Image (tube, rainbow, N blue to C red; front, side):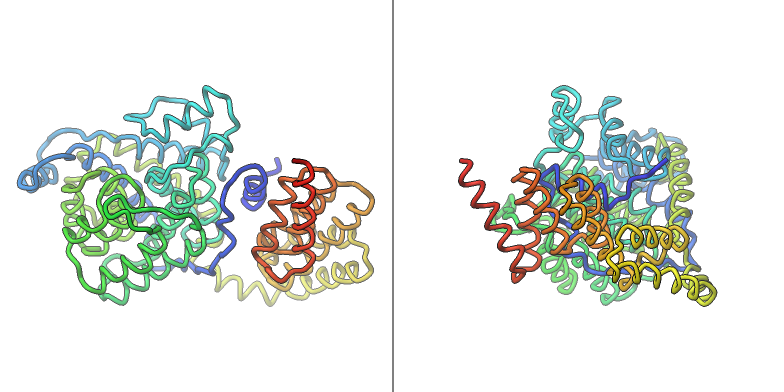
Amino acid sequence: MYQISLEEIYNFLMEETKMPDFMKYNDDIELIPKSNIQYRDKVRGAMVSLALGDAYGSYLEGQAPREIEYINDFLKGDKPSVALNITDDTEMTIRLAESLIIHQFFHPEDVANRFIRQSITEMSKTMKDFTINYRDRKLPWYKSGVESAGSGAAIRCCPVALINYGDHNSLKLMAGMQAVITHMDQMAIASSILYGTAIAYLTNTPPFSISKKEDILQFIDTLSKSIKGIETKVYRTRRSKQIANLYTRITTELADAIDRDLSIEDIKEKWGSGSYVLESLPYGLFIFLKSPNDYEKILKQCLVVKDSDAIAGIALTLGGAYLGLNNIPKGYINKLKNLMEMLALGDRIFELSLKNRENNPYRRMKENLNQLKSQDEVDKLLWNAIKYNKEEEYEKSVKSFEDLILQYPDSKKNDKIKLHIIEAYEGLGTKQLSKEAYEDALKSFRKALSYDLNHPVILCDLAITYLNLDDLDKAEKYARRSVEIAPEYEIGIEVLQAISSLKKKKI
């Protein structure tokens, strides 16, 4: 059965929703899996820690600081005690993980269906509004998300990061789009991408290896790059009402707090510690980065905050991804009521991660060996396709490139090959456009766009096609993206002006 690609889902959402173009500034972040890391233990550690943070945080939320130490000592011991229950954050994560495991890929409609299929513990306002839109008002899943900058979209992103720990492009696409299902908000989307990047980065980091301030600042720099350019709206902090966004808080404020060695209390007072993702995610990151090698200390610092289940879930998941399950105190783990479920999900997520070749720490060695053997055949197929491009036989060129990608999937990552593939699909689309085969032209241009989401010429081609179909809204959307990416692209400017003029006449 044909499986739709992440790029095709992204293009669909860009057409049908107000999703921000979060791949527009896609900085090249390389996640590097290592052969000396036990990834199964890391995946299990992250999944169990997410549930632990959620359960411990909700159980101890509101306790006086002087009581935390006693309760914490009791819970981490081997003696039998309460079985801790998870809440909505873990439940949503489980449903996303189950969908990924069953479909072996990201299936957004199935994710949305799972979110409404069973009741959720203490459902947030965002999830209540999403449920009303999708289940009760019968809106499509891609139009049911609400403008909300809560932390739920980020927290549930954990399994997405764990199946893409060596593949940042897929991680970013999947993390952003899973957020859109319920949270159609720039900061919520950025938070999911940032948090997913953090989990993947730490999954590739050997336990107890973060020892210097430089290690932490390098980590923060990677997180900053992952969300650059996504937030264009103005957000205000809840305490000081200052203008801020997640990018500036991470890039400037978090880096400065680490550099100046500020205390947990200083940051709590300065940023706040509620469920607003501008508070919870940076604060959870800061707590983890203050004591990355001490799991128990991370937990203790989380329990005296306002929204302790969200922040403990964030900070401990990072700790679990970094340290692994074997380095978490067993007394904590054994108190979790759904421990076996989280371990089983972790194992299935780990198995799914093995399907992504980018997660293979030996892939570069193998690719270097195979490259010598296959290069001659790749060159032959490529030459035929390029020859057809020059002869403007675009149907044959497209067929040759599709055969090439089928036999050598990694060749589509080669920038030079991608340029020729885009040329073939654009040539075919232009030919179809001249014959007024508009739907066929749309398919060809969309295929070209899937190889470069920010190609101004292809975006403009799509705008022209929609203009011919008299869909002025979509035409304007693509033309505007084209001009934003390439402000000096004259054809794009002319097309955008023409569309704006037509829309004014229709008013």
